Amino acid sequence: MRFAIKTRPEHQSWEELRDVWLAADEIPLFESVWNWDHFYPLTGDLTGPNFEGWTMLAAMAALTKRIRIGCQVTGMPYRHPAVLANMAATVDQICGGRLILGLGAAWNEMECRAYGIPLPPLKERFDRFDEGVEAITLLLSQTVSNYSGQYVTLTDARCEPKPVQRPYPPITIGGSGRKRTLRTAARYASEWNTTAQDPAQYAELRDVLAGHCAAIGRDFSEITCSCLARTDGEHDIDRLLASLAEFRAAGADLAVIGVPNHTKPEYLSTLAAAMAPLA
Image 1 (tube, rainbow, N blue to C red):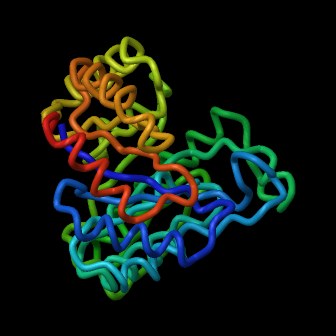
Image 2 (cartoon, helix red, strand yellow):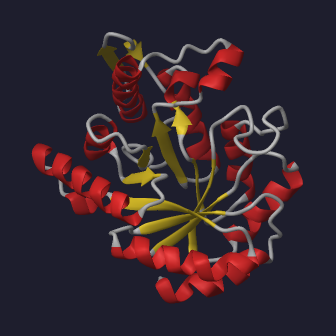
Image 3 (spheres, rainbow, N blue to C red):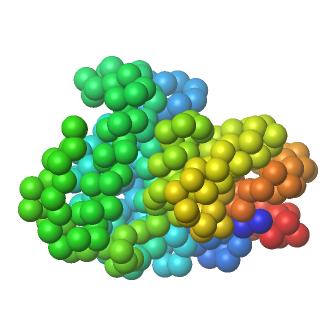
């Protein structure tokens, strides 16, 4: 099993987040570090502070040196796919080719309602998601892109400079939708992530993804299957290790460890030492 960490950009100072990311950058066990793409907090006081994900990524891209970085996962309705493609290319240039492009269909009705961002019904949302992923991959890989979908149109469109990673940064698709999300992951993803907390459910979803890969002739082993685990601090490590062992048995290749708010940088060394036997 491989390991990554995820910080919640809510209810914390910039300095706290920066210091944790820089500490993770120094620990080889952690291959990537993630934030989320929301405008409101998801826990505690929902009217409190929350940093915007992609501007935070750009700053962390410049500050870190080794570790891969990503947003888990970017809500497609929040930005036009062509705008997101340009953002991704820029961040990949800043970090020297360490971006992982996390994509999802989005779900947060509260923040969409607050900002007047349309959040369509599920079918349309996933239709838009599929078109958006295809348009983004074209823009990041082709000199000139043309695309005519129901919701996305590109006409002799360019995205320059291109990302460092070719043909484009690895894509992580997040979600648990058996019919749409996992089918899109089978087509485009280098990594699939789900928030499913039950190892049995995780194993079932993984099998569904494998089936979609078989249906289109893709080698399932090309996709990293990742799970999201959480730790509440040093007193919680034994429970975390037991959970990780279950997810490893269920087929998880990568565990993304959500660390608590106000985590001290030195805790990451303790966490890495505890998890190393599972690596």
